[in-house]
Image 1 (cartoon, helix red, strand yellow):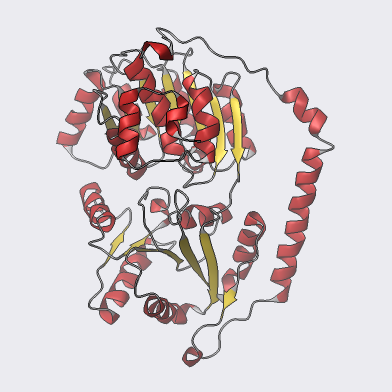
Image 2 (spheres, helix red, strand yellow):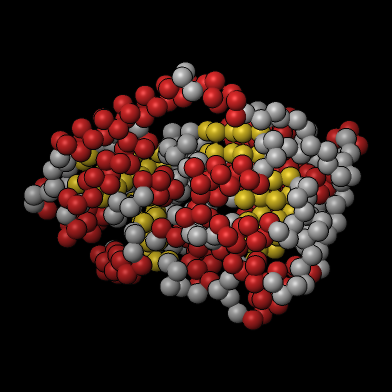
Length: 434
């Protein structure tokens, strides 16, 4: 399906064309039409599937078509990096319109606070905010959200993981109950479903490939002891000299600079930088800008960045260590092979991380090939057969659950399903009036 089939405003279509968007992704094809009609949306889809455009396009279409003024849209996100990324995408989509947006996030200086305050009081059309900083502004009493018509909760599972549940509830008390709510999450555990049930009204539910990497990602792994990992990374870099955009993820901040220094020492011609929460916000933005423009070839990052980096053309993701949470593997790997492109993901598995990696394989329902490390590194860990049995057992369990949900639980699911009907939107006009 192409974007001109959505019957959206011609100025928005022109911007989409300039941004080289052609075919809509599955989540866009399923969610944009009901969102344009004003329905609430409950969407569960993996990272890298085009979720941002899915909610940004209907919002801008409504603002432009109905000539909405003031702050009518609020997008809540877990991290400042994601707030900046969405703001940049909105700038692209709204290039031929007068739509305005502003990211609101912490970790900045006084001048940035004042700029945020002006945006919140002078009627910026779309506000993209992290919960903590937005609440700080709201509690001072000068923010008026009475005109909010669109409320987006992006990466809801990450929000709850970071402890933002109470903040979200407080923010909801400042915006009208009669609104369109667009709810996006990569996973749908009970706590997320409970929150969705509480804030959505007769939503259109869309669930796609929950917690699985994109098809375009080639996944591999090396079994290596901790002291062998840096040499394995060197081997990977030498095997792929044409790659010009590589991310290495590690679970701890203290390892970021150690990895950066080791790569820089062994490869004086390669530009490598690290990014973590230890950096000031302006420093993070500068590092990301250099990586996005390909002036930096290798970026070493912590998990806090795994959902905040949306950059096209990343060739390779290396997991220096296995993430503690299986779903974090999906988010890390989701940085490559975005929007139907191809990419590669390689994980370094130590002897103590085999169980965690087996859980990942069970989650994504795929056994990932384990490659031998270079012979000169000596003996490497051996993939234990019990881990493979654990994977196969869990895979069989997942299949049985899917089968039971499709058969025995179907009547129960039918009882819970809500009747879906279009919501009336204020000041709505027909598309023909464009």
